Image 1 (cartoon, rainbow, N blue to C red):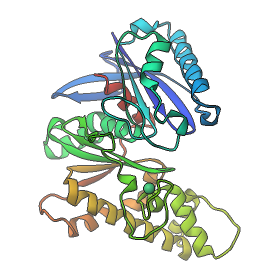
Image 2: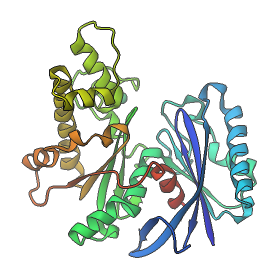
Image 3: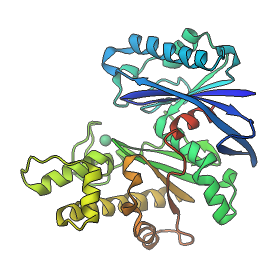
Image 4: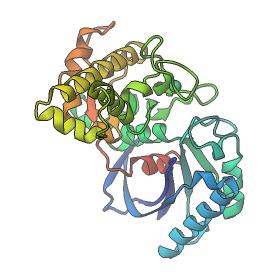
Length: 329
Ligand SMILES: [Zn+2]
């Protein structure tokens, strides 16, 4: 039996998942070097990240979370074959340190080696950006298999882009089953691509970043501007519901959003020419955003041929942890 632990570490919560390989009853099929392995999600447990409590407290808490997950499954740390971490920021490919992101207490820390020592884990711990982990899981176990079924192009020959449209906007680039990390770990940071020249200022210090237009909170601010001073706060989900019922303000907001999303995917397509895009995060659950998106893309492709497919995420919310775990293989 092979056991893997995958951690999905976000700004608000940290989740550990225990995966078991080759049980014959796994709910995920991993396609790797054109061989299929089944993976079973045995167990998940989460805790608040509590980023304001600082790094030392976090390290102590995540070690305790790991021990309790192992105990509840009657396993010891020595029975774990690999540990992968999905971190909320760019991760340097060699040092594995997180270089930026909104969870400041992890930035520049030697978290991978501190965690390895604290757990007394004798194998290597892998780490990568959380959106890259999502893109990897979808490429090898989700959207990639769907694309292979539809086109006959094998997972091992595919190029794809995972796009997270949630509280923030992030992404991951996958080439032939591997994450493109970039020279310093900034590969796939598509949320900070300039989508609007001289646009809204972003926390990263730049202006007009895609995240300022495509993340859930952007939909809410856009509605607020149109409501002209009304104090009624409505969230992105409610705005989508209103748009579906024909509300003019909400429809305006969503149409604007769809236009920006199309511009974003058109730019990414002309740079990377992926076989497909797979969208994740809260906003990706709204079917409305997919309407006419592939058609818009097809009109503005520099290289003609098959328009990239745009898939809604195929895996459950465990994709981040799954991607972190399979990265260790
Ligand atoms: Zn930015």
